[in-house]
Amino acid sequence: MPVPALLSDFVSLLFPRVCLACDEPLARGEDHICTNCRAQLPYTDYHQLPPAENPLVRRFWGKLPVKHTLSYLRFLRHGRVQHLLHQLKYKGQQDVGRVLGHWYGQELSEAGLAPEFDLIVPVPLHPRKLAKRGYNQADSFAEGLATGLGLPWHATALQRTTHTASQTRKNRLQRWQNVSSVFAVADTAAIMGRRVLIVDDVLTTGATLEACAAVLLAAGAAEVSVATIATADRH
Ligand SMILES: [Zn+2]
View 1 (cartoon, rainbow, N blue to C red):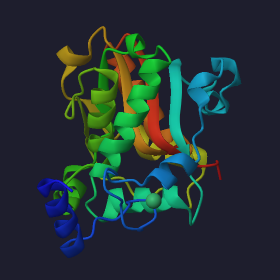
View 2: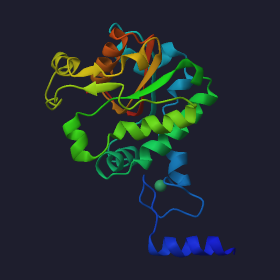
View 3: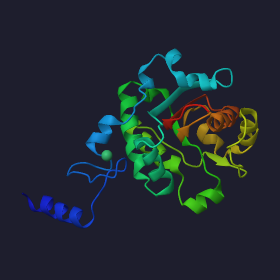
View 4: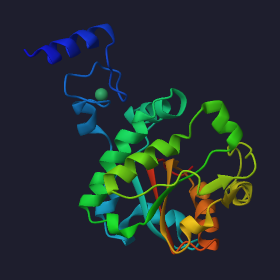
């Protein structure tokens, strides 16, 4: 066994690296997510369907012209996806976003979708929340996607202007009113005439992404599409 491999085995003995999806120790050569989890994650594969058959498209029907509605994984409670998102959002594991974004970006690229977008823009957090958490969980996903797709991303193109109240216990209209006035374009020159891919961690009702899409289109974006790490059933 070559010395670097021995050394890396010794380091993993002291600091065991575990899979971000299942918490089992990673084998040598595995990075962040184990081979077993990677094989068993609940991929939607919606990007391989004709757009009319993509069930996510319905969430934006009759509201805004959203070109592509993409989501990498199905959100299932108590499963690997919930664990991954929890690690990303509350445990500082931004590698979750980077790795999944990179894999997804490569898949979308192989499916011929890279030329469909000019710029990737993450849904921003309110500055107060950003200060508290220290990072925006959508940024690392945007970064990973940008690498996988070979496209630029812009973390501050959008900004959140007011603090949103909790979205729970609100109906669809109330949710929309709650988010529609909270986003603004902070860098008009960057988005003018561009086909923007807006990204977030989870797609639920679509109200947040819809609000971002609306302000981007109003500010002169040529087209908007959305991509999330996971999609949850509407409730
Ligand atoms: Zn695993």
